[in-house]
Length: 106
Image (cartoon, rainbow, N blue to C red; front, side, top):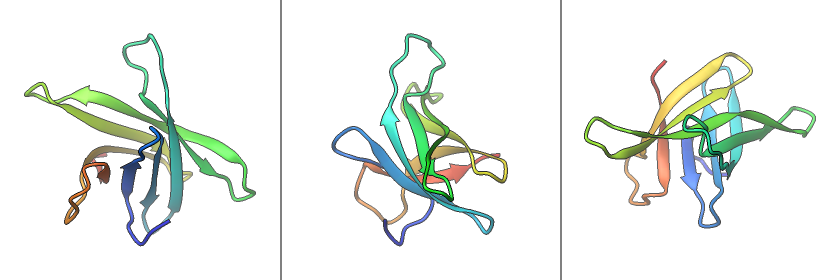
């Protein structure tokens, strides 16, 4: 993918790609838009490849509102070593608005 770690990229075709990493795991992820009539449903489903190459669902990305009414994204995925909960924000040193940093909060 790239030398970047802990990022989500919003691709032009509406999908997502990225990476989540720590000392215990390093997972390249992909995602697709998800539509639902349920208010608390994710807007993206997040997938990765198992060690044997099978596509597995890890979690989702939700669109939320901040205190000022602005939109932001929140990520929740199973890493195989526990659950990662994070917000997505502007990736440091990048001008690409579609490139977001994974900012763990839990």
